[in-house]
Image 1 (cartoon, one colour):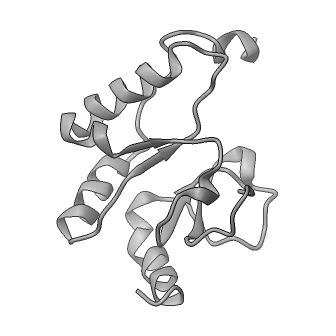
Image 2 (spheres, rainbow, N blue to C red):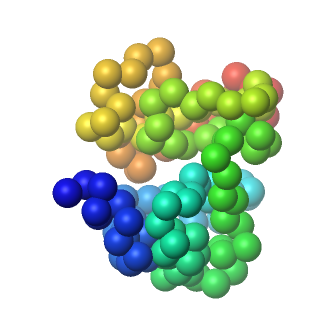
Length: 135
């Protein structure tokens, strides 16, 4: 069942945003932060990339489409903080960013990484990480 759903061509286009995520990200940019969306494409689903682009456009507007980074190795992306629901992020490089885990059922067994359960909590989580990287 899940395998079939993962290949549905409209899966990524029709995904809902997490509660308060859009407002919080827009607020972060309004506060002067430079934000990008970093996502892993599913190559087995031909609708994945166009769907993710459409979802960004729908939720954030067309100017955000150019701020989408698609990669299978997020360690190659430079930044200060990566908010991601993946429990453990590995790759070819040592990340320049600190990982802030967006809490989800599938990552609850992962420990040792700061965790955010609500997008409205981002100030209490992101600012300490920025201080840790010297920003």
